[in-house]
Image (tube, rainbow, N blue to C red):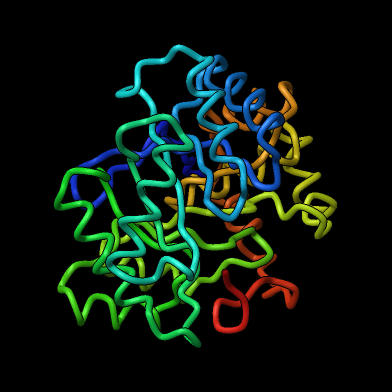
Length: 279
């Protein structure tokens, strides 16, 4: 059978590279985020994900500072809320985030949710293009955008995001949205990839593959993400799980096992839909 070896990073459409596995920080407070981020960086993580909504950018920044890692060796992602959906609002959000993080720029800044009821996500995208043109962010993207949200921002500006964060697990795969991303050269990143609280890791095939490969159930899921060409940002503040999550980049799956995981898609009803949820 053919196999698949996961990768350490992915190339973005603008030529940049993003690590395959990062540390997600929701719902950590500042103190927990500081410890977890410092530990993660010491263990080899180079992608750290936070957001204004998480309320922990200060703690993430402290963890980065404590690590002593040179700034240019780290990939920092943050996101802003609907209150910043304007050109001026994005500029203010960027200033607030870099101040809390203690850095001069961020590697990737995202619109956290489209909030279509507000009708201002195109303005938010124009704001991101503005600060990118000023050298304040290296890459710009979106989070929780479906094709119906991506189309207006591309039509208005002629520029597609380099990345779209989506809630994805083997049980909720968002195949249509992922295919649309791929067609436009938009990298898909999975948030909440381990399906916290949904019982994902209790599914029999995941346990079977964990036993077969001698890995954890979480590693099975993360390796599946990477096999699909997605990066992932699992949250953990536990040192042992941080090690396990990062090690998923070296797992080799047989194609039949990738297919078996992909077959469990059930379109979970409890996901947060961007047309009815957002902040």
